[in-house]
Length: 473
Image (cartoon, rainbow, N blue to C red; front, side, top):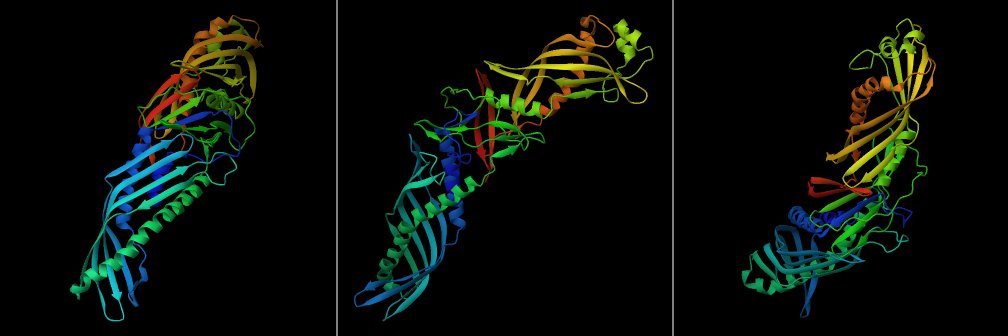
């Protein structure tokens, strides 16, 4: 029962409740009716499988009969078949989820033993229980003072017909026995169903609260996917607002950015929507800038396509040839001088990077001598895809601008170097950046759930992943 409930509720809460609420989200998660219907189908199938595997506790007791008692013992209870022909799941705006299982039936095998002061009998029995109805409402708290993240606020179970076939020695007494066996079976079903559901919900709540919502991206950064506000339940969907903040690894100081509110367009053709705001990528940029991820050194031994030296630069810039008569290897030191600026426009994801490139000669004693330093302004586009539960990116350089910041070899026209510097950035820097981006950002963790047929749309201020899901039991 617990696993079935977990499937029906995993789409309701994807994370812990955080200690701070009513903040704009960096990531919005929308679960549609289509997603809930899928959860219901998966959950019911798991419920059937689990019930057929489960072993139930023995039932022992007595029923009054005339001047005496009929003592009974029911053991070896085993469900052999479960039918759930009618089930529905619906959203209750501002409240939670309503699950209704109707006209369900169970077939049970069991051992039975009955004893009165006059006679006793025992044997095997097949029990068919039909017209079982379960109605349960799961809700989330309405404020952040609640000690639980999900609760069972209403539950009712009713059962209709119980048909019992007994196999024993005193067959002429079986009709007499049956009515005394029906009572404990009916009572056990009705009285135990909702407490079992409530116990299962309590365990789910503990699981949800024990989740690690701060996920490592790599050695440099982590992302916080805890809720920034209480789940909002509407008629056609559930919205979950997650913090969606990226931090330098182990450093949870405040971000310099403020989350701007944004709204997802009303779409219902997918089970799940994930909307990553510009803020999410801005905090990513800040985290990696703080960690020095945008800094890079290109030396002779690491250059993939040609050996860069003062001789090559001197052949283009006479001032370098005059300054360094003896050819020396050259080292390029690149660094971002400002936090890269992220911009999300309709169908466009761009990054503006302001940086510097220092060109140094590497002397025979391994010391370096600065030749000149340039300012670099780069505009790049990022294309996105989802693979292996991660959001991955690929960088494409749109344009570069260079200006001379400082020179030890004298003034020269920087335009003379634009071609070779652009080539170095295209062949060395961009592939290195794409290798890092290909490792991807982990998406919110839905246990045992994989995204299927994800589609990415870039909108004003956010990117939207529309996807169905598959649960692997």
